[in-house]
Structure formats: structure tokens, C-alpha cells
Image 1 (spheres, rainbow, N blue to C red):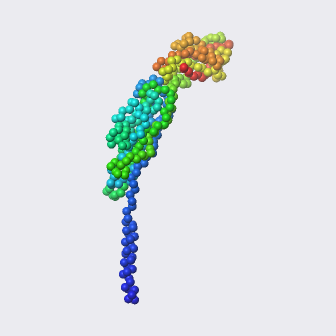
Image 2: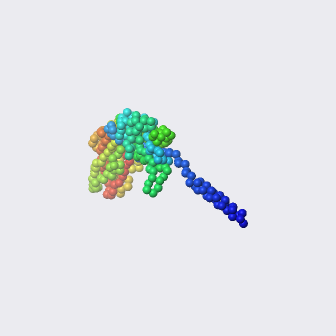
Image 3: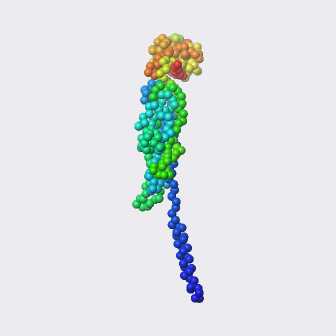
Length: 370
């Protein structure tokens, strides 16, 4: 019995050592994560990637605008680090001759003569300056969108490292710098992005984020004359007339004026013609419009050229035949990218005397210019 009592203290000491060892393992500090910043490329978004070249806009006019947002995420910053700095630049896309290094913004060439793209940014304005620490990587052309700093302790807790995000919003404006020809702007990486921790022996060298602000491919098309809203579907209402005014074949009455107007024509277009298409509503014998859905008999609608065109005023338009419209519809001059083509519609008795009823018909037209 005496021997067992003497061994008890030795077992107690072993248990204490084991608990201390377990506690020491539990208290061992974890290794801090290395600082790092990441980002993804962003493509500027335009309402359309096909743009019609305006015909009469002045130098400096805006053709289109696109926007994008870049997010830069930095992690693992400790109390020994200065802020992680986001850098934009060094390998900028080709700058336009109109670019101002001091901003506001950076003006890039598009590869299309007469067209440049100005990129501006918020909350820090983009510039293409170079030669000092606040420019792009290693003091090359660019600027600093922002930085993420170590936050440290708050009232409730302390953290060994800090994570944070910098966001930058971009607006790209396509600007006319001279005459523009149809063509295509290729997809272009405008601005590459980097990061560093300035003054740090390990992280003080600029590191590529592998992310860029991207201008998408954009097609530039030649402008075309556009019908005004009121000319896209024209309703010509002829007046009610007595049947006596159409008692003999060839009698005409109810002459009503209408016009077809266009805008936005290219400067190269000097004249324009309306083409009326032959179709089921055309009387191939008379060249007039049949009363296709009305109830009156022996009556058609005749179209005439109005004043201001190349044909004699009030000359009848023969709508019959595939090429008749080009021979009979008047040609009009374009001035300032716009033109108004004047026409008339009137009742004409066909065959015997017209009978009472309604007159409804239609014709399809298009416009053409050299």
C-alpha cells in the first residue's frame, strides 16, 4: 500500500505536462496570408456596336458613349504594409494626336481616321501623364485609380490582415476629329492595370493584374437618308365629292397634296427620288391605283408629281411596269441633308361614270439617292 501512495505524484506531473503541451499547440499563431490584389477585365458597353456616321456633324461632336466599371480587390494587408496601390497604364493603347497628357481623361486612337475615343474616370480622373510616382507603373504613362490600406483594430476586435476593394467607373466617348469613312474599330485593350506596395522590398515592384479596360469592336456604317416620322406611313385623305364630278372616263377631282420628307442624308447625296412599287393595287392599263377595298365603282386614284421636282409640276405618275416609277416620279434636290418631295393624289373616273361609295387603296414606296 505504501508503494502505490509514493507513485501518485509522478502520474500527476505527467498529466500536467501533457495538458501544457496541448495548450501550447492550441496557442500557436497561424501564418499570415501574403498580400495580393486581383481584378477582372471590363468591356465598355455601348447601346450598339454598329454606328451610323453622321453626315453633317461638326468636329468635336459625340457619336456614341459607352461605360464600364472595374473592381480591384486586395487581401492580406498587414500593419507593416503601406497601402496597396492600384496602377493604370504603362502599356496604354495608341494615343490620339488630340490627347492631352494632363487630362481630363485619355484620348486614344481608334484606327479609323477622323474618330478618337476619350476615356474619363471617377472617382479619380484618368490621365496619361508620365515621369513621377503618381503615374503608371515605374512612372510610365498612366494614373492611380485608388489604394487599399491596412485598417487595424476597431473597438470590438483586431485583425491581423485587411481586405478591401477599389472601384473605378469609366466612360468612353467616340469623338469626331475629322472626316470619317465607313470601316471598323477593332477590339482594343485600352488601359492595363497593376498593383504594388510602395517601399516594400517584396511587393514594391508593380505586378500585373492581368486585367484591362476594353473597347469592343465597333462597325461604322455610311449614313442613309431617313424618312421623318410622318412620312413612314402616310394617310392621304381625299375629300368627299359628288359622283357627277366623275361622270365621264378621265374626269378628275378631289386633288389633295401630300409629301414625303427625309433627313440625315450623307453630304455626298445631292438628289433623291421616290420609287412607287408596282403591285396588286396598280391598274397596269392606266398606271393608276385601283379602288382595292372601297365600294365605289369606276373610280381610281391617280398620283401626280408636285412642285419642286425635276418633272413638270402636276405631271401624272404612271405606276405600271417594273421600271415605270423611275421614269415618272420626280427627282428632288437634297439640301443640308434633308429633302421634301411633293406629290398629289386625286380621283379619276375609269371606264363609265363613277358610282357612290368609298375609295380605299394603297401603294408601297421607297427612296433612293446616288
